[in-house]
Image (spheres, rainbow, N blue to C red):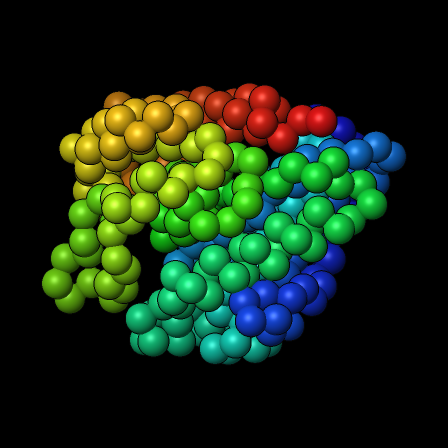
Length: 247
């Protein structure tokens, strides 16, 4: 882990060239480095996800989190923006792909970039990170308990995203998946189906499931947090990105 870093709110081009808000965190030392697009969860562009971006910067990466709800609620409190997004059924997959592509392009344009970019997301962001792996030119993607990649959302759920199992042949980069054995969205059975589909398609991937962990086991400060699973998960994330984003 390195020392000093800089973090700031910026504007980047997103889907359809729209200017959107984003949070950039970067080390202050010299040298070219890999970069990570951090995809925030359904609660939105919040302090916890900004902290994740800063953690990547502290580990030597450029990190950028686009505000996926900027168009719906520019300048709004994260909780209010998330409520607006839920009421609208979330954002479209098309917009997500455009916003992640814009973020990846911005990161590659930075002087400190080595040209390699990965993505990571948690919960809804995990599904979106997998979606990005099928649609954006990325070098690696991490899916942390992304729901509804295999099975559809139950009736009455706030979001109704389409499953992505049919997109497996389109995966463009190595994928790391981290899941809880006690999770219901996704279930271990869902992840076994996805694992088999990726294997059958010849896609490079690593899946790990943690006993005693449910959904959101990375979320410090929530009852779902599981320290052992989170510590091991972070080690796997940095080993994965260290392999695929170094240069």
